Length: 144
Ligand SMILES: [Zn+2]
Ligand SMILES: [Zn+2]
Ligand SMILES: [Zn+2]
Image (tube, rainbow, N blue to C red; front, side, top):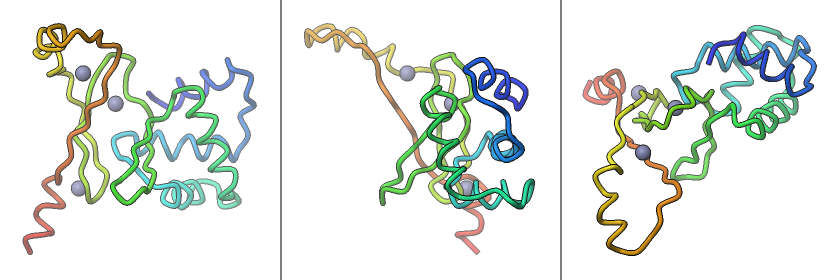
């Protein structure tokens, strides 16, 4: 999702595009492949618009979550990471545990499980699958 799509979606839902909101959205759009923390998003938004404040960042993330425009992952230690949603099509992610870089995986392995689920007399409604590891950059910095 790019910045223009994002702005359109917010306008369609009756939200005004303020300078601050736009800065936050731009920061998210520029980091659409990376899961980032709220603090990180705050820093990046301030680089675009220095008067951005933390509570506005939180408020905007809440709005984006409500509109299902943002994707949220909780780390093992309970920290929330955010990125814009990538596409409406069903997909999965592989996520770097160190820097939050994500790659989209279009293949859905659950298809192979459908018969097993049926045999267990369950009706599958939805599922989530995230794969975790280290990206090459983080792997290399670990080795040195
Ligand atoms: Zn995605
Ligand atoms: Zn990484
Ligand atoms: Zn799937």
